[in-house]
Image (cartoon, rainbow, N blue to C red; front, side, top):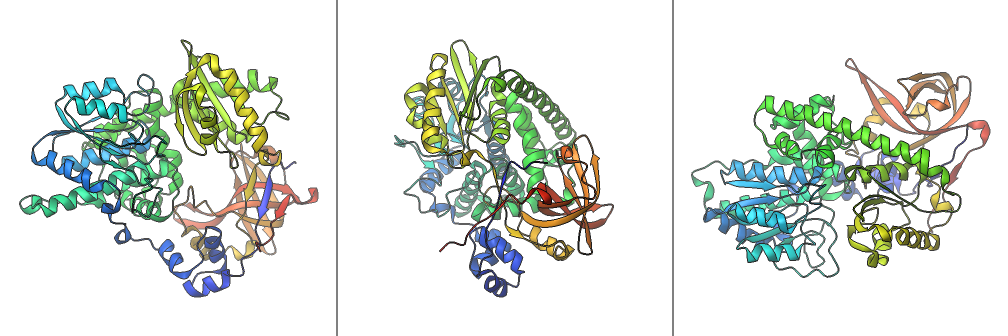
Length: 583
């Protein structure tokens, strides 16, 4: 057995006992909070018990006042409103949230989602023309629009007003010609920058409801309960992989609670069709069961089906939509698998991965809708900046993913002269360029990486939160650890380390999963390693293990279980890197 990953273990914080005393939590949980940048009692209590009442005033968002004036005027004048969204899960939930909200207000509204393969991301001139022909008076963008001043100018010349809500990076040449609500705007007084697109849409809904209330709108009509929309907010926020801290943590935690008794038939149907127990919904379920199904139609099929699922009030329609979303997701998995197999069999063998620090792979015919997922899969396997491109009619469209230590957006910006268009952030980007520029892109990205990345940067690392012993992982302890959920970007699942575990039983379950019973002292626990069947057999061996503690529920019975992240034979010598305390 070999271990090709570094295990990084920080020293115990000397402040953990004090934080534990201040908050009444265990020293282990205090250490976990400190590892996540939370070191004082007040912040810890807020993190552990986030409240919707602590949401920030939406009027602190730059241009919210101007946007509200335009929207309220359009409502009072009975102008038609079109919500313009994006084709991913964040964009669809953002669009559905406003559509459902306006429907509850009995305000006539339509939506427009661009076709990923034909139109690409965000506003485009043809779409603006189509929307104008509907008789639209106001366009509200969600999860897009920050880079579309040219298209917004066209909309204005066609007699429409525009409000932009977005959360992506502000372009260097940003010069707004309409209200633009984006928490990343540097002049904004809103203190939280990391909202997803659906989070921005939710804050807009809060402001609209308050504005209508001030104008007496609800004197003779019911006021919508915005809690109803929080499950949509949770799904879109987790799907977009924004940090689950601050306002996002508050929204997602409340939204997951709302989802357990969701009022949306489509959410109920998606939970059922994906096999999620509504009583025990986790952020993992949202990220890896619901979100892929919602993303699938935008990648390979009819995106309208995703909107159908999120906006219908008919249970049978919702279930049919959920089935179709599942079918599309299965097709997406096959397409993605075929591309990965082609890459592994025909391209990777010809690469010098010892010398090359990046992967830029291009072929004609690869499906445009799955490039980002393929890039992510290759990044997981080879741990280096990866760009995947498909070529058609002399043009290449691509998607990229990157590792910590290499800012992909900045790198592509340095090569900006090669692109027709590109956008993204530190770890992900999308772009279009002439096929004749692919070789220059490959050479340029490799040159940048050679100057930035060391060989050690290309070795994947597992960051461990703490070392623990199995006898200490009681049911009460594991429940307390899980109270830090929802887990995701910015708040990863707690990863623990134990050494000298005796394997008393080893087996394979499913097609490729390792199942163990391990013993330390008098404590025996079960452990599951997904995709780790190649480590079998281990019975009678002693291992060091990195794992996530979780609760295994079966037929009403609960017990602690270890989800194996990595392990090694003790006799091989520990690969763990014990970090020094910061001075």
